[in-house]
Image (cartoon, rainbow, N blue to C red):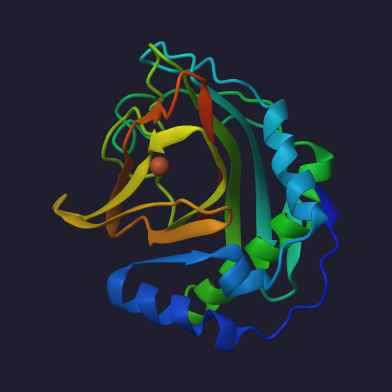
Length: 245
Ligand SMILES: [Fe+2]
């Protein structure tokens, strides 16, 4: 494993208390990386976002769509020591019961690059999420699945962020951050209880908008995206799944 040095754990209980109380009450929360965690964005955010221009095609689309690009890596995180360690590159696997469209198959994607893997924004997000989950009583040891995903759309091609429909990821918590929306309409994140009754829906509009959801207690889905004009568009997301070890 490659271990990434992380700065000492900072006390963020006050900052994260909104997320903690909302997840406790609702099993999810919406927020914004800048407003809730970082305080400001700088040039590193733009550099980080530009790495979504360098993702490979997702060739494991059971609907034969060519509108999804992604990179994927696995890591473990110790919230006590704030140590993030990347695992040897491997396949992404979901159970068929969790993802009827693309589950049951080992899907191989390019690994996220060392630049992204060690980026301060990834480390910062993981540390904040880990602290929230620790405060919620989930312990400190996590398996992470880290996905960079771009969904593209153009005239004649709808982009389906969630072609499998209402589903679970098979994690304890799934976290989604909007990296960029460029020339698209749609892409509404929807959350359902375990009876598949709609609880909440929201379009993540601004860079850094996030949702954290308890995957054991909720289902989720995202509506299709269409181009807002004649030009093609895309929607870039960072997804980090947390599964207790
Ligand atoms: Fe999902």
